[in-house]
Length: 310
Image 1: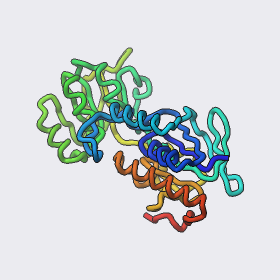
Image 2: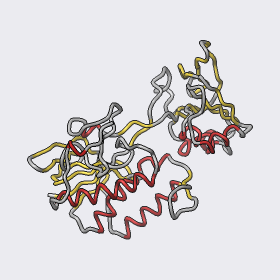
Image 3: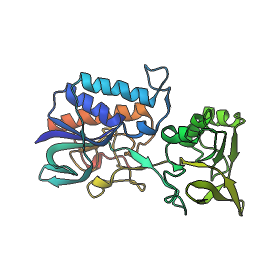
């Protein structure tokens, strides 16, 4: 019997595990990968105490901190969580574990376009991670789809790699942070195409181009690489029948990071407070663990009436 099981090894889960270790709790730390969305992130310039780094370097520091606190994570994919009496059973691809509380820190995953050719050319020119796959397209003409922060950060990363970058956005204006928009607009290698809805991806062995609609006309764009950066979907399937969620599948939490199910807490990008910021996810991870510990001790009310209503 564990006091808590932390699911997910992104910044929220890592922070929760650090606090659990320092509180000397009997805990289990499970995740199907280490780092979560840090594996597809770029520069980090807004985390207090760190002037500038990359997500890869940030992960190295976090691993050192886990080692320092003697924290080990088990690489397991959690498939289901069931309530049993006052406790919970967490089922993974490698076993079952009983716990008093659960902290869901499972983050989110890239959204797909769901257009013809996307699945066919996945890893054959279609990618969802500019940082991971960008170097493959050195000196080539590529397209980035998405006008938010993720899309423009991908464009910025590709600047010294690609020969030319087309940025396609389905809306009338870019929605990313102002400094990113200014950087992209002032980059002569980037061509922004607004009101462009991607309709299909084509090629033979690999990607050769894409088709999009603009102002009622179908147009063609010859590119060798396509980076899809249109947001994230929460990884919350394992608790869909246990806790209240918003219309997009994010776990609803209160300021206490508790959910509608007593004993289940949640933090990070899988919650309905999904700002996709390291500092917010880290703070939520710490809050969730502290409140879970107090819940075990009988000092925190946890339940449906605690959930903020949208």
